Length: 300
Ligand SMILES: [Zn+2]
Ligand SMILES: [Zn+2]
Image 1 (cartoon, rainbow, N blue to C red):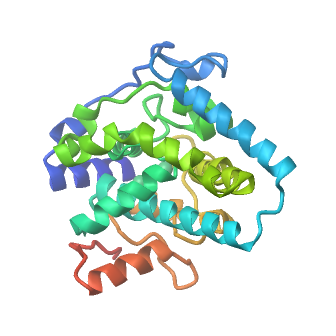
Image 2 (tube, rainbow, N blue to C red; image 1 turned 45 degrees about the vertical axis):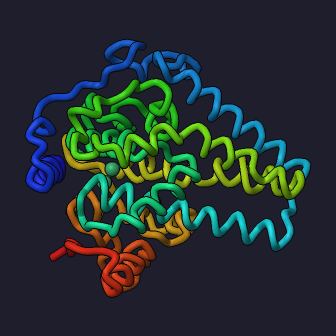
């Protein structure tokens, strides 16, 4: 079972025996928050809801009034999107959540910055949500299951309705000053990410800010939603699947090979075949070659 494989993998790597215990969703909206109206936010998550609403409204306005960014702004938007995606897949997902490799501190913290600049939140909460997802996949305790809550629950709604998973239970290994430091910087970094483009004019404001953040958000959210909506599966079977076209939205950084990932969540490589493009993996191989990544776990 992939969920057991992950929890054992995490527990062995980090000594988290508590990851093997039950950890139900704790939402102020009740035990089945997916049955609540979509606009109701769990306690403490109203700001997340309003932020997501705001960036969507700004992105729509930007696409209407400034639909053509010009090559300089387009390139800058693409570079920031690329770095943010790498921050999530290489650092948050493969290194922190699954301990599939160890990154040199300089690379790790640079990637955390770009992941946070991309709107992915602090490293500890991302890791806790993700570990619970794997360990409890397709049960009511899975933070973002489309089987339990439907497409929109798994795609977006869980972000403001599921409540907070207990960090002490899921990522005690990240309960260190170096990670708590980033949590305190979350709002300032996001503010610069959203508004910083204004220094270069209105087109840059919309493209470098809200349009980039909304694009990156949905690219990631598709992994929780459609990459877990495999058709023709038996009840109780793992729902994860590889989706080739999703690679375009992920700039071919590898997260679209989600079926591979759930089969071997401890592997740092997500694209197993030569044709399964995985720039996250290529970056890891490069980092390993120059001594900035170690203990890289390969599928076998
Ligand atoms: Zn998954
Ligand atoms: Zn994972």
